Length: 150
Ligand SMILES: NC(=O)c1ccc[n+]([C@@H]2O[C@H](COP(=O)([O-])OP(=O)(O)OC[C@H]3O[C@@H](n4cnc5c(N)ncnc54)[C@H](O)[C@@H]3O)[C@@H](O)[C@H]2O)c1
Image (cartoon, rainbow, N blue to C red; front, side):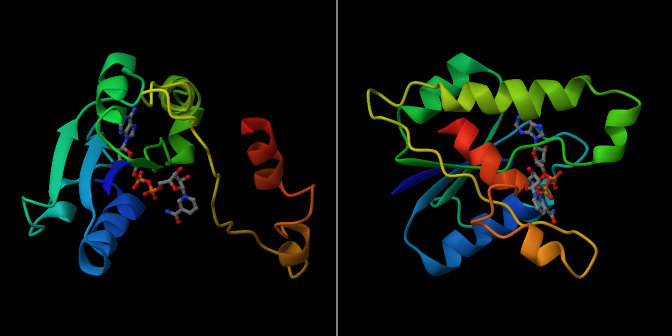
């Protein structure tokens, strides 16, 4: 398969790309804007015939459409993830996390219906957090997000 990994130069995305190369035969394209959080060094040493980097923005609809047209699956990790930065300037968070993610959801997959699956882990304090954040619990914020995307 040809897999597009957004945010593949970031912390989780780059580890995922390394995992794909080590454990599968998939060919990977990384789409990453290379913000302060992106680091090409995290992709160093990966085989050029298996992994390529496109520097760009997930909010760039023509670029996203073109990339979707030549990939079989998309794994989306691109984000403004340093939450404290949003206190001084929330704009990049809205552009990337909201508009950018929306751009991916409505991108042209050459007529193939897109099935979105939202996944995350949660770091939360308190001994009851595990129960409260149970996947099957409708009060789990990620359950609610996934229902909204569907
Ligand atoms: N790190 C964690 O422990 C953790 C835990 C749970 C969920 N998550 C989620 O996983 C996702 C990835 O987290 P991370 O820690 O790898 O983040 P990160 O900040 O390390 O990486 C984000 C990557 O996205 C890229 N990026 C930012 N804006 C972009 C844009 N508009 N277009 C294209 N690329 C863009 C950055 O350059 C960077 O390479 C986030 O949604 C985060 O909330 C992370």
